[in-house]
Amino acid sequence: MKNLELIEITNEQLSKMKNIELDILKDVDKVCKELNLTYYLCAGTLLGAVRHGGFIPWDDDVDIQMPRKDYNLFIEKAQKLLEKNHIISSYKTEPAFIGDFFKVVDKNTTFVEISTRKRDITKGVYIDIFPIDGIPENKLKKFFYCFKISLLKQRISNGYCLNELYEKRSVKGKIYNFLSGFLTLFMNPEKATKKLNEYLLKKDFSNSKFVIVESKYKRLYKREIFEKPSEIKFENSLFYAPTDVKGYLEKQYGNNYMTPPPVEKQISHHFCCELKLGD
Image 1 (cartoon, rainbow, N blue to C red):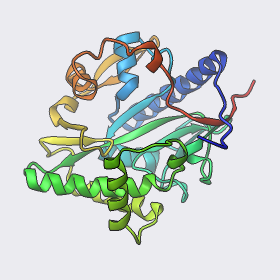
Image 2 (image 1 turned 120 degrees about the horizontal axis):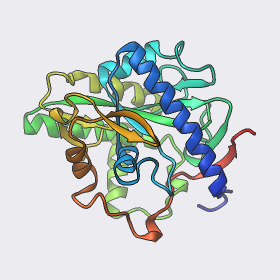
Image 3 (image 1 turned 45 degrees about the vertical axis):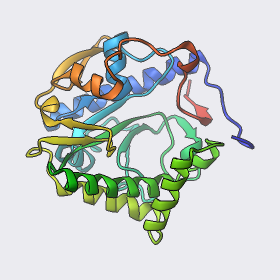
Image 4 (image 1 turned 30 degrees about the vertical axis):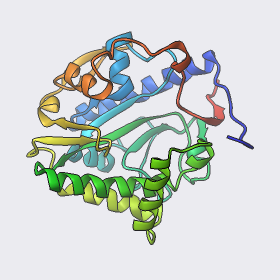
């Protein structure tokens, strides 16, 4: 990460960021209930709720997931119901946004990460919202379905400044990067984003035996894990969680998910260039 001026986030700033993200999450929860939309806490947010009763102490991520139908309706209808300082940032709302997810951002803050600093998008403290999509049951169809998704995701990732974050890549990673770049040679990250989101609509969530989360081949789940939302406490407020929280976390993190990582791995995964959190 040469020639990059990174900001070390202080404990006071981290605490403020968590409070801002919690406010966004509460707003999203309120709007989802108004629009009768389903969502689930996921990834480190759900793990934090189960293991710590809220945020993972050394991190500030808030991640939620929605079945694709609810996800699209939120992008379409939620903006006018959200608090005025909360902005939906997605490829449908901001032309320079790339990715297979969207963010709800507090526009009264500034949070610039290395990966998005060159993109003309709203840059503030945010929470991530991911779609849950159906996937074919046939093994061969499933393989090619996921392979195409992976190629498009790699093309999208090439639109970020990710090479500046990693000085070394594995041989396998370099080969895959070359292959995906070659097979999507005439596609820019913006076009790849549109193609990926359209492609993921091919298999409906509601009639699929398995679903894919975060568009990642290793994130394939039985749909019944997301059959009906349950409730879980996160920072003394109740939010929606998957039907089978244990099954989700075991799939995501393994059977020892309740055991925190070693101290040297208890770090945030955000690489921040600029941070302003207001008064």
